[in-house]
Length: 126
Image (cartoon, rainbow, N blue to C red):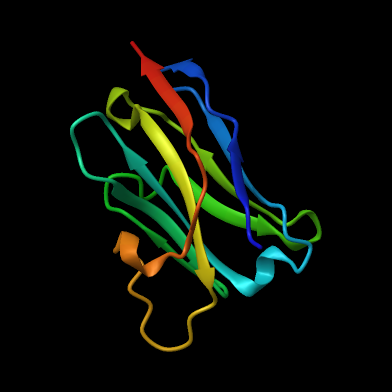
């Protein structure tokens, strides 16, 4: 059973960096999964941030060039390195996963992902 646990959320200032971790408790390995990060603010729909499927990386336009997604297979963990944080990055960040996708990967849609974590809060202040 895949269980995703996010960590690393914090209160930071604009311009700071932060790394979010998404740990998969299943020992079978994170490398069998395509993993994504979404974020959500109150009253808004969950928004795609980044995804990793095999060695393909995807980013939303709002974070491209500032955020980097990566994985450590030995630790069953996927990371989201967030640099140059902005006020508008404030949100509850969720990790999501699904078995690796061959062919068309509809990474933007929340319905693509079978597993979700509980979220970790990132707050960026001025």
